[in-house]
Amino acid sequence: MMFIEQLERNIASKRGEISRWIEFHCEKVMVPLYSSVDLRFSEHKIAPIDTNVFPAGFNNLSARFRKNAGKLFREYLFSRYPSAEKILLVPELNTKNAYYWENVWVIKSVLEDEGYEVCVGIANEEFRRETVSFSSASGQVIEAKRVFQEGGSAVIDGFVPDIVMINNDFSEKCPKTLHNLRQPVLPPVEIGWHARKKDVHFEFYNRLCSELADILEVDPWMMSVETVLETGVDFDFPEDRERVSQRAGEIFSRVRDEYSKRDIDHEPSLFVKSNSGTYGMAVASVSDPQSLVEMNSRDRKRMRVSKGGVPVRDVVIQEGVPTSLRVGDGLVGEPVVYLVQSQVAGMFYRVNPLRGESENLNSKGMEFLQCDDSFANGIPPAFDLVSKVATIAAGYEIEKVLRDVDC
Image (cartoon, rainbow, N blue to C red; front, side):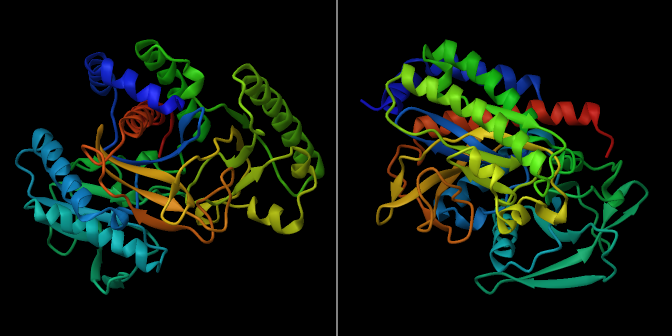
């Protein structure tokens, strides 16, 4: 029996205790309005490898999952802001990616289907136009207008929203236009990638895994992912590559020991990632620590900057989780789960015919496949639970950022 089958049996038998545990943590911290969690699972482990709190990709969800997302948005927003009728959706600006704008159109549409009036606004000090239009992959035209702050409220062209909803991860900085607003800003702009750190997120995640493993009566190693921070790194300097290589070698040894204890017949792998940022940028797959020392100029260039051109100086070295998932025509894949607050809205699969089971699938050649809804709620129980743990970890991370970082 694969470990995930046993894990799901334990989840079924401990459902009440798990629900109370999730409820306890959700009452304790600010769980983000929405999030997406990239999962990897193998024959011996399931774990998140990335958690986004300003998720794009809603266009990849099936019609059923889109409708579910809308319902969950309505339930949460009505519970907190029952008189809210107008929502300002703030997207990315510096992209012409038609699939990203399809995502914006889908978010706008699911909210409108739930009865909200939604306008799209650009919050960027460098944006000087009053109105701009973007075309989505399906040919939808999204009109966006410049956001101003008047009397402590965000406004666009006479539209005064009750809620400001962010779909922009602010990799470089958060705009002054959105500072100190009277309206609720969801998620808070302070937690963009200019402030978030992956090592902090995975520290919280691994702690939560230890608690949950006690409830499930399983080895916490099966859901955790070792993540080590290395600071002040410039991959153009040989001594820095040597330093990262040495740390990677230490993690390789620990992972190999864990594999040996559990009779796992698989070679360890690692990922080296920028400690901030997303979109699969500044990520290196590592099967041999020495390869970090010997990085060629092309690979070093890839590790210089993350999203928005932000220089990479701090990296995490993370245990790799090979994927056992095969979807479509036998393609290597990974689940991407979408949540509203702590409730799973839906998922799809990321596949990449150009990559292997231990490599970064969020890279050139990736494709997205809707899942077949073959489970009772469309989501396998283990995917559902681990993604909830990841978004709760994001909640603790948000709390720390709001306490420690001045936007």
